[in-house]
Length: 527
Image: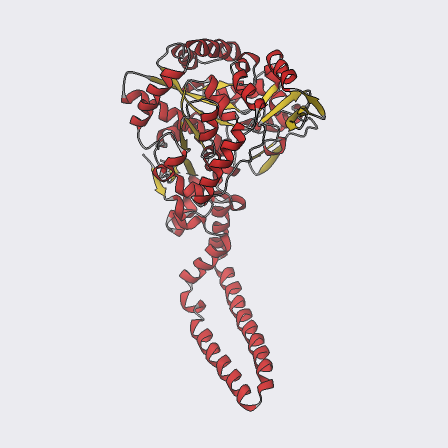
């Protein structure tokens, strides 16, 4: 192992919820059970075996084969074969359809479920688990996924298309793909396998193959859930949802508990938590006094039920029901997600109850900080504790100057003397004439500004003396907390595999992941 860890509560870039959720026992009222060890997965497998039907399993494997069999790796095909058995389950993560499968934390999510599956499989012989990536292909927030940061450039897919991003056609994708592929021109590495993926009829099909090939060596099964045969299994939930606001009421009740626990509900529930999909649109289904409205057209419940039976593929769950859809079609044990995802999962236990579904175990994904050679060299020179680098850049610079020019920058005696002088001036003015007190106050404010200006001039002079070290602090901050965000949320993973030889990077990250580590894992890539 070549990593250290930092507790999340020492890093301001993590939310208070993310810092707290590492200890799931304090969230027990919102969960099926806290997930604290591999044995908890075994108990969940016993429960899931009783409620997941063989018909669902057969349908899932058939659909999955139709989606990926033409390009799946040997280990992916083996996992598909394993899924035919009633004692094989999934451990799942998911994400929106981000450009070229960035940023870094998408890699961490997927390799987390790989490691958790491996640990479960090693722990016992009764059950098997396979790692799954769920594509949020029906999400319609294109602005959140259209850009990627790579080699100090921002790549953006410029498109006027609307509706579910997974259904976007690839006609206007060529320009951003050309920009991406130009980085690796003339480089004979495994990136060429990804660059060679043929153009697809829609973006979801393209990214499904991209992510499948990216994780081919790890047996990860990538699912495109926007599928008619899979949606058929979801029909009972859809029909219950349009019959009345049961799920909405369950969320509102659970939200009160979330607020009482000191947290703000993450996701907004609606009286009907469904969309209707049609060309280029994802339309809300709105209950009205006369029925349910879609884009201004009113349907009676009976008419909408008939439409559900006729075209289930065009009924799309929102954030409240998407987990229910996932657990309907997958033999799933655990969902692994980021802090924001965990924050809305704790709102959903009642939703699963009204829709008669087993609530899965949930786990917050690991977070990593990658340190390459260039970054390590500069960090070693400063020799600070790792957690210090997550502080604001200007604060670090001032701290460095104070540490290296402590005597020159120590103006504490001057400020003490100034405060004494200020008190004396105000008291003297007051003793002569009460109206002079405000004059004395104003003069001391002016004098303090002069003292601060004097301090700033000293700092400026010292910065010039230590210019190279301060430039190193700039470099470190831009790579550890770019734009004051965690590295994993900003950079694309190819930033750390500039030749496109990404397999070794994935192997190294995989080897450093502990799926039960709640802190930030700092990985030294030079070892």
